[in-house]
Image 1 (cartoon, rainbow, N blue to C red):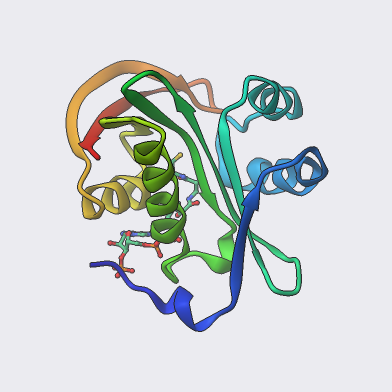
Image 2: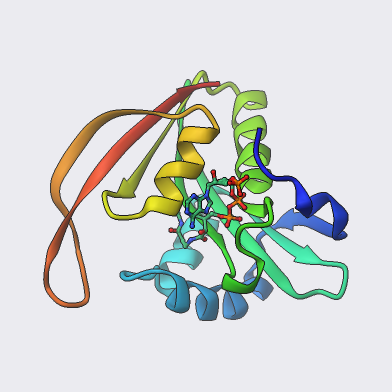
Amino acid sequence: MVNVAACAMKVFLAPLSPADIDAVCVAEAALHPSPWTRGNFTDALLAGYDAYVMRQATGDLVAYGLVMQGVEEAELLNLSVLKKYQRQGFGALLCEHLIHRAKCRGALRMFLEVRAGNVAGRTLYQRLGFAEIGQRRGYYLNSDDQKEDAIVMAKTI
Ligand SMILES: CC(C)(COP(=O)(O)OP(=O)(O)OC[C@H]1O[C@@H](n2cnc3c(N)ncnc32)[C@H](O)[C@@H]1OP(=O)(O)O)[C@@H](O)C(=O)NCCC(=O)NCCS
């Protein structure tokens, strides 16, 4: 079980649309060492990836996530919670939502990659039942030009 303080705050989920991309890009730049670009998000929408935003009732962006769906597999490509909303259960909630959707669309397994040094991400995914199945050495390039390993995780869904 994860913290579900999120339930105390009214949030809603909606498919990520082109109108969300400005706010998502600002958040992305603040949250990730190698942020997705506007072009990455636009391409993801054009490719039909399953992409969702979570917003407060006021409209304030809380979180967003994207999944690429294959035949029996899905890959969680991005899961991000804005700093001020972190550690309140929203990341777990959104991830569960994306897993549920992938399962309903026929996926049997979900995969993801996470930076080896990303304790928050690794712990969250572990709590949600993902297991580490591999490592990609030097997969990520950080802003200081240092390489960082990716941990590959998977979950039967
Ligand atoms: C990783 C991330 C999505 C977690 O979202 P979140 O909404 O803060 O996570 P939750 O509140 O749902 O946390 C669920 C559980 O994950 C674990 N967790 C989350 N953040 C953690 C942290 N900073 N340190 C240790 N464990 C953490 C805890 O087990 C937590 O349960 P608890 O609060 O009951 O202890 C968020 O920190 C984030 O967006 N980080 C920047 C982007 C990123 O790294 N994304 C993931 C890789 S793509």
